[in-house]
Every structure is written in structure tokens, then in C-alpha cells.
Image 1: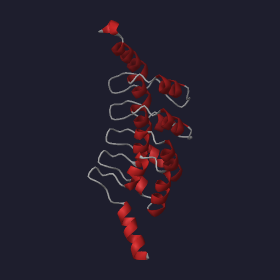
Image 2: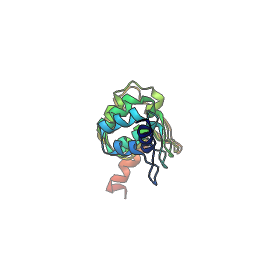
Image 3: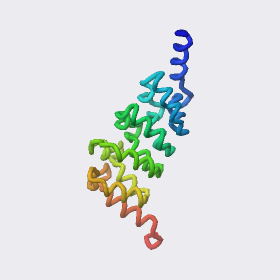
Image 4: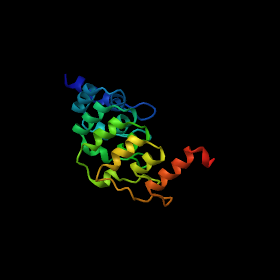
Length: 176
């Protein structure tokens, strides 16, 4: 039995050509029971990154897997601080992929402002991305959270307000 259990532990660490492990896939497909089982076999899986440096929480945020994100936050809450190759955490990823329900879930946690206002490699906060992508409901949600700093400046010297104005001009035929 010990040999069988040792082999199972090794199998859950196997990755595909993109570096995704079983937990990445469970998160993508919102398989909460599988996430719990995998965590019980190897609690470090949640901290393993694929070639894009995405954790399972990044994947849950990208695919809108709310229950998976909830389970991952319950099992390994500090994975929310981890960033990918672009310097983006799960907040950035949920916004870039327009996953409002995942964002709402993440905002329920008492997280420090530094995580919610984390700047990626381009200096963009999650709010910058919401403004650039013209995501009204997400903007509203973020701007009503007192932890969000709406005046942070990115590497181009823009605040989210500047990015919102640029986005408005880009979507307005009068500016073409």
C-alpha cells in the first residue's frame, strides 16, 4: 500500500508540455472535489507554476471557476499573492478575462491593499486593466472597494482614469 500511495503522489506532480499539473486542470474545470483530493495528496501543488508561471488559482481566475477558486483560497490562501511572467496575480487575471464572479469572490477575502493594487510588469493595477478593457461592472465593483487605489500611475504615466478616457476615445467613432 505504501508503494502505491508513493506512486500516486508522484503522479499528481506530473506536468504536461505547458507545465500544467493535475491541479491546474482541476481548477480550469472547476472540479472542487478533485482539488481537495489533490491537496490532501500533495499540499505544495497549489504553489507549482506552469511555463507562464500560472498557479492553479490563476487558472481558476482565467476560466471563471468560482468554486475552484474558493477551494484553493481555503486550502492555500497565500497563492493569491503569486504572480505570473507578466507580474499579474489572480485579480489581474480575473479582470483581463472578464470573470466578475471570481473577482467578487476574491474581494470577499480580507486581503491587504498591496495585493489588490499590485502593479504588473507594465505598472498596471487590476483597476488599470478594467479601465482599459472598458468593463463597467468590474470598474464599479473595484471603485466601491475602499482598498482600491484609483490614482496609481503605470509605466506610461497613466492612472486608471487616463486609461478609461483613452478607452472611451477608442470606442467612440467621433475620435476616428
